[in-house]
Amino acid sequence: MDDFYFRAASNYYPRFYTKDNVKTFVLAGKITEAQYKTITGDKYVA
Image (tube, rainbow, N blue to C red):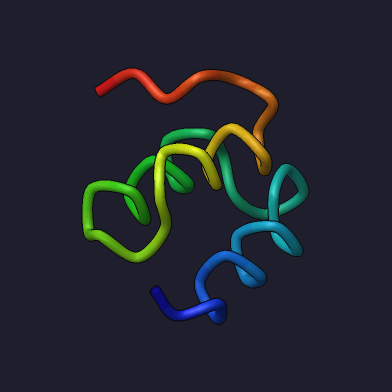
């Protein structure tokens, strides 16, 4: 999986991205559920 989207979401959350924005990356297959948890601190729930 491309590291670009993980780094982008990490850099912009929470200042510019909300949890819903980060969830969109998971839905699009750009980051994993585990990466979502790393970024937001919350377990991914669809």
